[in-house]
Image 1 (tube, helix red, strand yellow):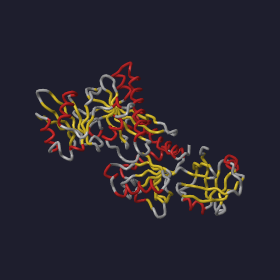
Image 2 (cartoon, rainbow, N blue to C red):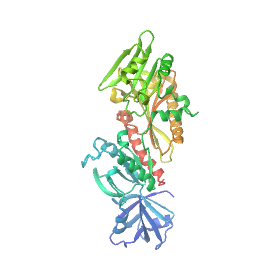
Image 3 (cartoon, one colour):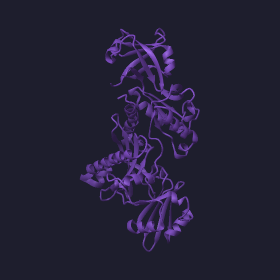
Image 4 (cartoon, rainbow, N blue to C red):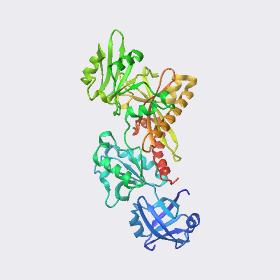
Length: 455
């Protein structure tokens, strides 16, 4: 049975161990006055007696005692699901993060607006959504003091454990913190709570999974880890360009682009501080020694070497695509947005933080591929969905959102460079993608409804 929206009120005249429902709900759910049912909100459960009253519409009255036991943070229009003599309200969605700032208007610092957008986008579905950190969990009482955005203000309210957690830990360093790992492990092991998008991806692990699968191998550039001098020299002679990438990196940090010019040597370009740096070396060994000390250094062994692709260009600048994907309310992968990212002049990557810029995808494809533009766009979408479905088959845990960095070469071939489990949202700042940004935020709630069987 599907969940429905109900008007929930706390009524002091409701008997302490009873719940009053309207005649319409009694008929819909097949309830009889006097029967006992379970009532749940998150991890909190009470057994109550049903009283059917001649009320119009889908109305439910709770006694103050029942509301306290369930830790109802607020009442009003709430989603309800009745099945197997159990009435569930919710779902309760927890957005797990770090970096609480003790500021009533910006409780999570610069990321506060991001969380607000998730909550507001899902408002019409009427779930309970709060943001919390590991420190806000009381394991003894099994409660969370979560932060809700209600009537344009943030409110910390005592709440039950969530039915589902959307993991938005901001970076790898925060992810490795003991309290974060302990919190996630306890939720997984001692509760029925579902968690999606937990953890950051390792570039090499993801490459191996997709490179060895027949459905996705054609999208994968030649890649090795750890690199050797012989492998890099062969790849540079064959491709003339390679990238050195830290296997656990993100945001384009620590990436080197190496190009080989016979008779001149090896050019190495990278981003440092606010500058793009270009050095020339006579030998590849000298280049590696300069930046890493030795090819045998522990730092170098954490890098992978990847074939450089000659991408399509816009105004002489290489362009790749950020494909932002979500699971919908039916659990199917959807491409929500394709953002075209042009590298800044002299930049190693197309990341906005290193000088890249967002341009309109349809205009770029039309300019580059002319009458074949729509076919190339369809190829990108099909490749992205195939990659997401294939990846999900092979990893542990549940995925509901992905950011794919995809390139298209001058021959129209699609390549995958990276898969992001915590995709940034810079592309949605572009005017042409703002509506897609709102849809993206709404998909978080839609997928949570699916995971918790509310739809």
